[in-house]
Length: 574
Image (cartoon, rainbow, N blue to C red; front, side, top):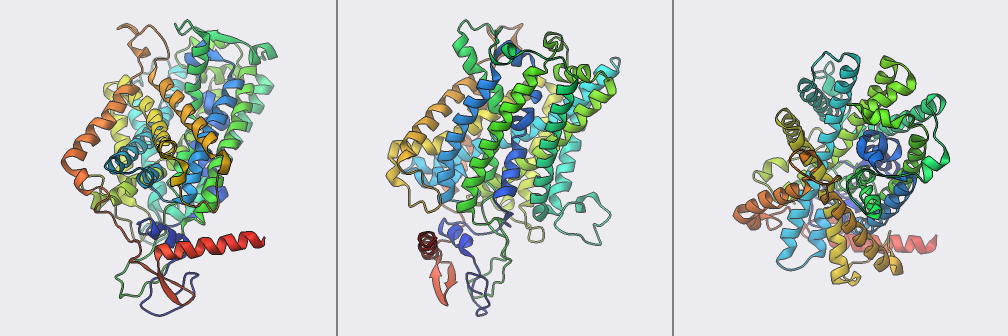
């Protein structure tokens, strides 16, 4: 079979152009590609549900109206800054469309002895960020149920029982969602077989995107119709500073904190462009593969999905911000409630059960789909790093289930870690919140490192960009991206309120501890094990893999060169 899938001789390997490009990067094609530009864009919408509609609702705490406001401006600034950053990363994604994302970009761009260690730390940062995001969504579902019960039945004590039970329930549902690959008589009556693993995930993403947008539209209609309204001055000019900081300018910058929480989802897209599932045989054996991939033509489609997601989320974020401030009603009363946004929903609808169930149905449904997206992306980075021997027992985690076509062990690992984080709530809610707050910072650091390397070494180090080239705007966009990312990292490290004392220890921002832990524990394993294996023992399959083009056997790198030439020729003709 040749590169387009035509039947050839018995002993020839079968790869398409995207497989050949992956081989040229030293990676074996092992995962299915079933995404296109728009289904991957749906995934971006799922991983960023806070931004389209619920950015502010999910984070409805005293911090929202005790610091800043002017959220119509905040949403625009954050959207522009994060879009510039993702534009820089999209250029690298078009060059190296692999599941490792920023981890591989760092590996490809850095030089010398720092190259493997920087790539290793970036990979760990991504993993911490993705897992903490999924855990926060699971806990939020638990908190929604607990807040509803506390309002409807104030005598019931659910402080500890609700988070652990609901977190476990959401994670069990996630396992059911990702495990099944096809209907079988053995599993046909079991919940795991309801959804068809990787091949059904684009459809799940589409349904989830409809749920997010539909829930947002329903929320907007109900609240616009029923809630007391504020005037334009309150929406567009009112500013609050009850944080303890004396400088309003810094408070405005600190207000990026909540908006940024919903703008990290594009990270997930970079980890779903990696590779295809096929039977990897010895050179002398026949190889017949299915030409299905996690993303078709990722060098072209992935950058589009990344940027489309950011633009769409930015627009919807601004609209949601305006609607929220317009319908905030008696926000002072809601802020003094133990459960601010649940009280808001109930107060606006005038029905304890109607408003509470409406909130729970929409938000828990969104959380479920978000967890599918974040854990899909998280499992891919775990699998990608395991291929590079970044963990103990990497060989175990790097296995792809041949029947399901997904990295089932990596998925299981991510789910187990999520559940362990959920157990932390039983001992200390503050400890759990510290881990979550550090997750956003870790993702931002992973975005920053590859762009900073390009600025330091010069854009001349980048290979040709056939599908997405920033051209003369490259340096400007990269400088703005790095500046924005450094600012956001500073915001993530600062406490939201001051002064921080023993009675107000909840004001403390513990992100610095998460950064330290992300360096300390992986650093210890690096010293004693990973530095001898990471990248050095990876599945390097560069030019020793044969691809057949026009009846001629060529190596993976040569296949990529020929493919780029053909696509350039087609572009000139069109």
